[in-house]
Structures are given as structure tokens and as C-alpha cells.
Image (cartoon, rainbow, N blue to C red; front, side, top):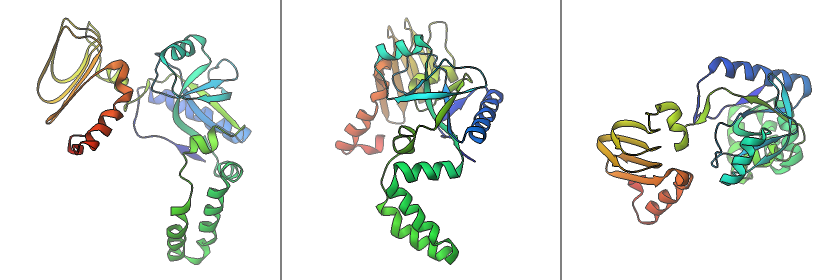
Length: 252
């Protein structure tokens, strides 16, 4: 049994998460499927992918997936939230090694061929395996498991999870962990927000003060300051690219 668990996630309800995993394990053993964990959405998030369910989610039950949906616009995400048949794709999945290898053979045959070459070297010892990896790996297709297998297989299900999950790589998730004041502002470090609502302020030195600002993300780290509207936070990669283009990668 294999379990893929991304590291950049926050889970508040650990006992609930353990229960959800047990349900996923049972579905994998019983039905020989790939079982993902779908997070019950709490907001119309445009920075996450979604899974569309074949039926309404039930507690402690694996439900078939109709399709994976890429990051939606705000209107579509709002409709997903209201409809009740879409879950956030957390990138967590459970699968048996045999099922995963079969899916790779079917959907990414070039990768399967490379794996088989490496496996064939196993009886010859560690040196032979290392040599096989060095020879084979550079030529393998660069494709994620989501695109290569998950979105192509018909043997997939999901378990709905309401466990206080958030992707800590998303600025929108920080209020869940940092808390909010009476005006919906969240902060870490020395921050002052006056006459403002829904801001996120993070500083590792000095004081950051906001006056009359709403729905901003303001980050100070060392000599670098980032200011952006919350609804554009998912585009922060553009800033990273711009810094690199100007020879300023040291500020990333």
C-alpha cells in the first residue's frame, strides 16, 4: 500500500484525518482503486484544483470521481461551493503498488518501460541498479502522477474530508492558522492595521503598519517587501519571475 502525502499542508483534525485514511485504505483493498482524499471546500478558492463527484459525498464512504477540474475562476468556484459535488484536490492518494504499476503501464508506457529496465537490474546488486537508474532516468517523461495517471484512469474514487485542511503554500490559508481580529485581519510579527479589513500581514523584522487598506497581503522578509491584493495572491510567481529576469533572485 502506498500513500502520497504532500508536505506543504496543514491539518487541524488529526484524528479525523486518520479516520479518512482508514476509509481510503478499505476502499483500495476492497475495490482495487486509486483513492484520493477530497477536501470539503470552505471558500470559493481559485488557487486549488477540484474533483467532481459522481454523486453527493457520504461520510466514511469512497465516491466515484467524474473528472478532475483545473483551477477555476471565482464565479465557477462559487458555483462549485454551492453545488456540493466538488471537493478540493489535496494531492493525497492511496493505492496499491500493483495497481499503480498497471496504471503506469497503460497510461505512461515509456515510464513503465524505464521502470522495468531498473527492476531487471535488481538481481545484479546495488551497483547495477545505480547504473540502470543513471542510464534510464534522464530519458523518462517529465509528467506528474496527476496528469499521467489520475486524470486518465477509470479506477479512481475519493473520500470527502472535513478535517481543517489547508495548503500552507496559499496565502488565503494563513488566516486559518494565524487567526483573525474583529475586522478579519491576520498577522504574524509586529503589525498594526487601522481602519482596514481582511488583510494579511507577515513581517520578520521591524513594524508594518496599514491604514485604510482592505484585502491586501503585505509581507516583509529581510530587505524585501511584497504588497498584493489577496485575489491576486495566486499570481505571486510572476513576481518571482520578474525578480529573476532583473538579476534580483537573492530577494526571492
